[in-house]
Amino acid sequence: MAADDPRARVRQLLLSGDNTLKNRTGPKSEARARERFERARRLAVESGLEGGLVEIIDRRLQGLGRLQGPRDTAPGPTPRTGDEAPRSSPKEVEQ
Image (cartoon, rainbow, N blue to C red; front, side):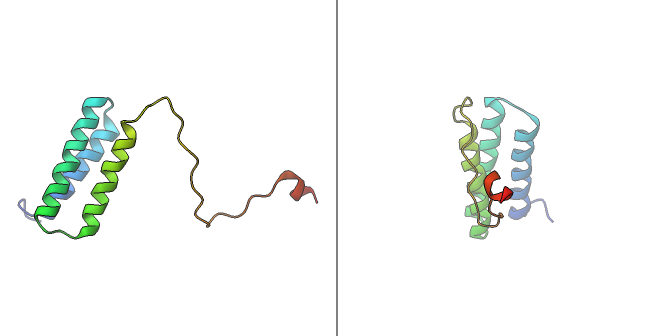
């Protein structure tokens, strides 16, 4: 891919933001990652790249918003998708 290819640049910005979050901690690294994700989103919209790509970037930004929330709260329960097998109580298993 050419260096001026918008899709390649968006991909590079997303990888850079992901790696920043993966390998660094603290508010400065979160701000750097957010800035990279926002640049990627702007470029994707300005270049007319497909909406699915913008949606992926938006999800990363939303996830980053959760990282900036209070850190002393435990995450909520994981919603069930319906793919899991129903759980049996110990009494049901004994019968």
